[in-house]
Amino acid sequence: MSFSRPNPTAGEIEIRPLVTVDEFRRCVDLQVSVWGFDELDVMPLRFFVVASHIGGQVFGAFTPQRGMIGFLCALSGMKGDLPYIHSHMLAVVPEFRNQGVAKRLKLEQRADAIQRGFRLVEWTFDPLELKNAYFNIEKLGAIVRHYSPNHYGMTSSRLQAGLPTDRLIAEWWLHSDRVKRILGEIPAKKDLEPAEGQRRVGVPADVTEWKSKDVPRAEKVQSVIRQRFLDHFKDEYSVTGFERGKENSAYLLTKNFRID
Image (cartoon, rainbow, N blue to C red; front, top):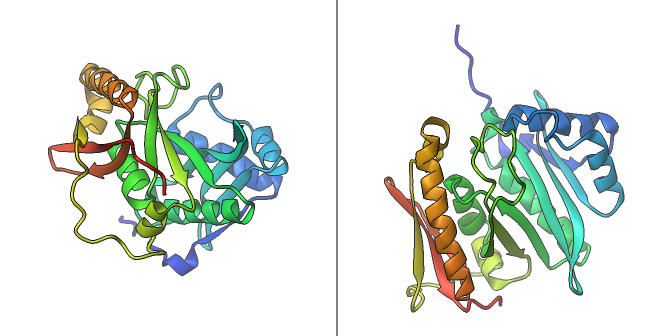
């Protein structure tokens, strides 16, 4: 017996704020099914209730057939005098990935943040998860200027495979020309030359697979790129691009990058 994979059109996927306890409970369930967290690491129901009441963001993605297929949760914070949004979680069930659901959740987040006067959204991501890196940098226009070793401590997530939770910090400057160009709101610059003195941090394309099949090998890669990022950021470089390759991918870093 075979089953067809759901393939809803963009119009069939609804993105909207979550407001009910049952919807928040579904977010708890999705953490387990998507990341494989055990009870200790799951964000509880009350977290989503509080986030929705203190100026955070809790959005869900829905289809008529499946109900909720993904969610995004974020909190508001301060960096000095700058209010910003910290985007803590985004999950999409496996059978609905690669269908634009994550991007639609992020665009809803951006629209809501701009409406409320925010300029910046930040979130963390694993530098070994190359698909996420490409999405964050090339599809959304985030930049990266900080690396946080073992950011969350050790976790039960099967996706982490027992490795330290090293994270890059994505900065999404919502009004910047860079973001507007990447999202198609203003024309893209043509015939751009590589930035002078640009640096690269290469990552083997198979590293995500190694996390599940050869953890020592993945941990060695993690250790090497950790030091490279820390050195480059100390020298005031920022991640402004990402190249995908069949054997190796690379983060592209620019010296003294200015946010326009």
